[in-house]
Amino acid sequence: MHRRSVIPFFVRLFIVCAFFASSAVGLTTGEKLTQFARQNWQTENGLPQNTINKILQASNGFLWLGTDGGLVRFDGQRFTVFDTQNMPGLKNNSIQDVVEDGSGSLWLSTPDGVTRWQHSALRTFTVENGLPPGRAWSLQCDRSGVVWAASREGLSHFSGEQFVPDASLHGDTQALGPDGSREIWISTGSALRPATPDSRAPTIRTDFLTGKVRAFSFSGTDIWLGTDHGLWMVDPGRSIKHYTMREGLPGDRITCLTRDRDGAVWVGTEKGVGRIADGKVETFPPNDPLSTDAINSLYEDREGNLWIGADAGGLTILRTQKFVTYSFRDAGIDPQIRCVFGTRDGTVWIGTDGAGLKRFKDKQFSNLTTTSGLGSNVVLALGEQPDGALLVGTPDGLNRVNHGFISSLTTAQGLAEDFIRSLYTDRDGSLWVGTRRGLSHVSGEQVTTYTQTDG
Image (cartoon, rainbow, N blue to C red; front, side):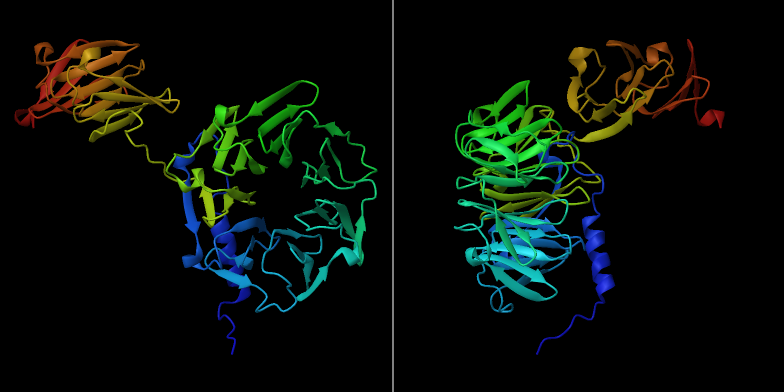
């Protein structure tokens, strides 16, 4: 007997929206790949198996996955599997592609044809219904809601009750995808052209490429072409750039591409994921699963999270963290942090317990130590004066850092003690210095100390 969920649909939909809204700003290119929050799901979490062929977020917010073990719906908490056992109309459990049409129906490509799931009913279309011969490996839905299907033998689109073949295209179809306006494009052995014959967009020659085009993505006037021998960025009429493992990609065989809302291009290869932002290639560390597994699908959801479907490693999400942790391995040390202070120019200064003063600006670390002129490598307190000078309290006195010049203030100039515990700059520009032997007030050249005897 099947039991219905006691959670009302609108509550479950709220859970979906709350889960996928965790990162509404998207993935920022200023963060390293290892700084993104991530989560991974595999068979032990409810997937039927760990090969994720396609990822799609439907209009109702649910995430749909095409796997070799059936179609999977994910609500952010649990996976629901639809396969040949609980959906008799489904001919094959190997779901290669999933799209949603303008009416909200789901279309699935399998080795046995293209199946439409509409109003709880399934119907499978084959070559007898207008599909080109061969396995339909790619599906796309254009801006008018029409579904397109491509195989190695041709291209067709759905019209009413059957598919209509493209008579002008015969064989050697390599990739199918939309441009920025949701117009569908098809890549052949020699060109990238709009799928609709009446389109005014010009055909783009690609016969200069080496290897078949496996994926493409439009980015403004630039077009990214993923092939068996690397990634090409083509700016029609101006320049061509070629990215391979020599330029830092994890692999040369490109399997999928997507461009995020921050302008970065994410690249799926047979050896992991890479990201290209401002012409720079970044990858995950060598021991990371996302740098070893073949990648089948990349998808940015409506909230800016990036979903990654692997060939053997299941489903992974990347999202911006609310808190970013910086390991001091980035700065070459691993000290205890005594104090942190942000100055008006955007610099963050970090006082350590024996490794000196760390400067963090523009996501780069630099060091100030006793060799630079600090009184001690133990930094206990930090502050800033009105002229922008940095104040550094140490066990051996007070240092003033201004444009690289370091000066000192100690008991020789009237401080109560050299062991500086705390600093405070008053509104009048004077400085209060807390020590173990009292409170010193520094105003210009005058130093006044207050102790218990002063109340």
